Image (tube, rainbow, N blue to C red; front, top):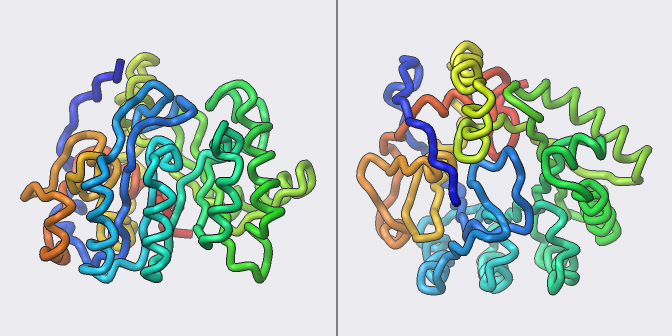
Length: 320
């Protein structure tokens, strides 16, 4: 059963008022909540038993929207987006339009039954892989994501490396994602990236392009964990105290629109999970004729997760 989301409070920080969109560069699409893992920090509450998947008629709108809005990047997420039966066709259509495609990959999907050729497909299409690896130590990863996940993740990274991912001059981009183990802000991204680079190379021969540090959002499964441990309010206070107004210039909602598996539009994936609609509710088909530039962005207390400290977005820290 899906855990209920905690109450959503409207953000009180005056720096959030009047936040509006710029030009739309990225269409982030959640293809469904089915996943081969059930991670403790997951703000989507994804897992093997979730059945929500985007329907073909909604999927078919995506290439048309990419053309209509001249969108440069298609960001595919889930769940495990690769488990959607239309994933590969969608990737091929987007790449044929010259659109960059990001696959938010949990790495263990590469060794799932019927996915053994997935890495070859991603490389052939030049897909940018953004891979979750919350630590370079086995015990920490398995504690957060499940027994055996670390070794399968390393095997996936080594497979991607053999295909050219993360290697200089190949154009095949492999970025890793770090999430804290608990209710803490991520450490400085550059320092942690250096540690990841050294440890993964020395221990496993793995190379990559960038490390993205993401704050854990107080949403869905992680929110339930915070509430159960009595850390909910303390974590929200940490995010509020750490708010940096200069991060607002670079938050992802200013250039991204999020699409849920039903085709509804949101300012970001986090608002999607909380059911916080655009000020005027919209659907994917509206983007065929509607330009969201200049429209207001819906904000709430969880938005401090993107502006706290060095900032956090789907592309990692916002400030050095």
